Image 1 (tube, helix red, strand yellow):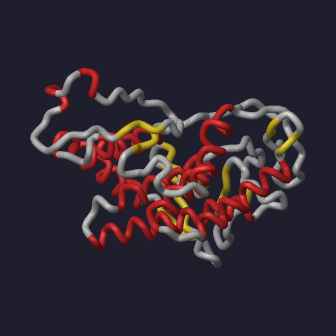
Image 2 (tube, rainbow, N blue to C red):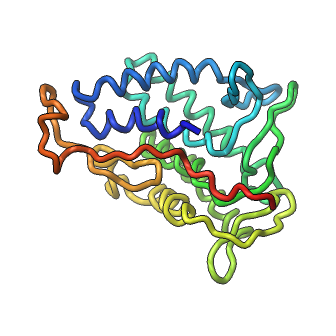
Length: 260
């Protein structure tokens, strides 16, 4: 549940204009990414790339849809490396995004379950089978489209949106599914569906000049914060208080955790 911490290490560096005053956060993020690489596995036979779940000293071949923000984070951070490392992390981002997209494509409703298991010799299977309209996969598709220009990510996003339209839309809004295999609906629309899922889908089909990533950075709730105009040699302590980045660390939303 500390995922936003890793995301914010990178984004504080971005918001600080990637200057020496915030270089420490970038260094901490790169150290964390070395740890993340130790959790990367690939399935047989289709070679889906996924991130293991660590609990204490044990690893589980399980990945939450919540972790699908990682491809976008890696794509955003890739440019800060040298050429070879940059390509490695961008490739990993693309591979993980393909897996997250297949979380959706692998179910009858084309909507992702809450988490997936990767049994030995198999590709992936739904664990917890509800869908509560989470944004993480489309968030990563947005970043990958913006940073690579590859329209495939728009196509994937459109397919996900169509699945929401088909399975989740009701007269008064959108609802989650109790089971992505049967399509049985629940009766709740999480606030992050409007604040994040639809926002990232909108931006996925907007010109890159709409909230450009060289001027803005999104926090973990998809609120855009302007990148601080600062140059090397300036310390955060010396900035006027009105220009200090006010960042509140939060874990990514759990959404509803009650039994269905």
